Image 1 (cartoon, one colour):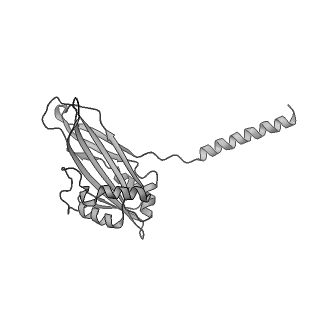
Image 2 (spheres, helix red, strand yellow):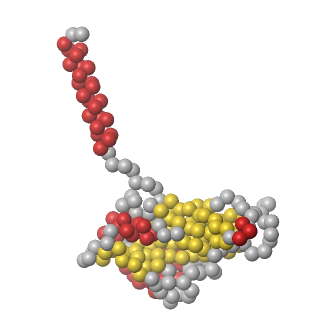
Image 3 (cartoon, helix red, strand yellow):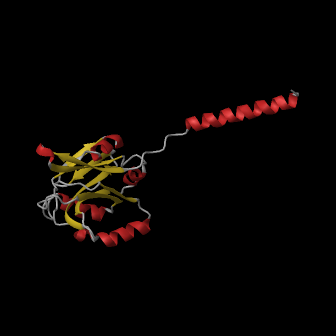
Amino acid sequence: MPRAARLLLAALVATGGAVRAQELRQPERPVAPRLTITLTRGAGDVLAAAVVRAEHLMDDGVFDAALHDGFPVRYHFRLELWRDARLFDRLERDVAWEAVTRLDPLTNVYQLIRTGGTVENFGSVEALARALATPFTVDLVPRGNPGRRYYYVATLEVESLSLSELEEVERWLRGDFGRAISRRGDVGDALARGARRLLIRFSGLPRERIEARTERFTP
């Protein structure tokens, strides 16, 4: 083989090895946030509850960056029970609950406030993520109508808040706006949720909506 061809071949092999090494050094892509619903059954295989779990909420670093920029983050969960029908499915009942997290810029401690006013503190974003992944067992099961088919739809809306909105949400979380978990539908009227979503959308602050649903089942 001529010397020029050997040099060209060696250069191509070296370039390919460098590209492969660079690919190996690339960081793994973050796992996308996920919402799951699991059905739990008791004696006689009767439906007992639905378990809702949100995972990988902090993996991509977007909302952690918002926390470091001084914007608290709000997590609004909703679980809906739907009855299957021939023409139009019917919403039977729903349950909503919330959580808010913020970062203390002086201590670098994450604070998580849940529905009911409970407060937890975490020293790392990884510990906060594990707390946010705690499953919620929701007592929302069909009543009567044996033999009917149902399904669950769960949604999670994650969005940044201003400090004034944080104060209002905290009051609701601590019980100033009624029961800790609402069974009457959306409790966001006091927060003017629709107008706030528009402001967040145009402000460029991070927001995300995740949805999950089950297969149709009989209780």
